[in-house]
Image (cartoon, rainbow, N blue to C red):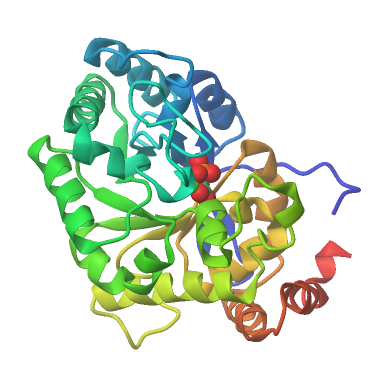
Length: 326
Ligand code: PEP
Ligand code: MG
């Protein structure tokens, strides 16, 4: 795989049987969006909006936010751009939004939860996204991070609908959301699995601690089981519980680092996700490895990975089935 220079042409990775898989980019600003477009990403699967504001003492105005979103949208006319509402707290503190003195910031009032005490910040952000969408030809898909319950999901969806922002979705980053995805996706139109946080919360291992890296591994069988549960929940929510293998009626993407690992990407596709979002430089390798399998083969490898006793055994089983990685 390393020997040949790889490229990604766009239009989706094409599996051996012709199945197409949307490959999207993770970005944090307009410069990233430009690079993602140059790398032929099919759109944006994760726009980390908080990166626009990390060094700010005060909330940026609606006008300033509108301009920032518009600059990003302009690179993907007519394409899907998944905009994540501000994910502040824990590893991304924001002075105007989060409390620096919480004893357990990763388990605290972070991300969507900040809107309970300061609803105006989320409201202003949604106003700005709607205004930017109206000024461009982008199709923003708005989603909220760190969702754990149906009430939270319904609140986000309602706030998006009020502004004509459709579809509205959620990130699956908590085991709670993964295990109740069938209900959450009765309200939300799509989900995106954030495997970085889902792994941290599943394994109860701080993602910022290098000493816990062996636990913070998305190959862990418990994490793969929760990805599988999420994809299954999406099929149930879409009224398609039995037809395993058909694309889920509610789109489920993966936007954590796992999506950019070619072998793991095969597993994620086999588990039933509909799109993968990654740093643009990972697009060619992921597309190349996906092209080496059929959907049926990906499903078989995914089943082997989920059934493996350990993360190491899961990796070995999948790599053994992917000769292209040798
Ligand atoms: C994730 O948690 O997997 C994710 C994509 O979001 P972030 O890394 O920004 O928390
Ligand atoms: Mg996250």
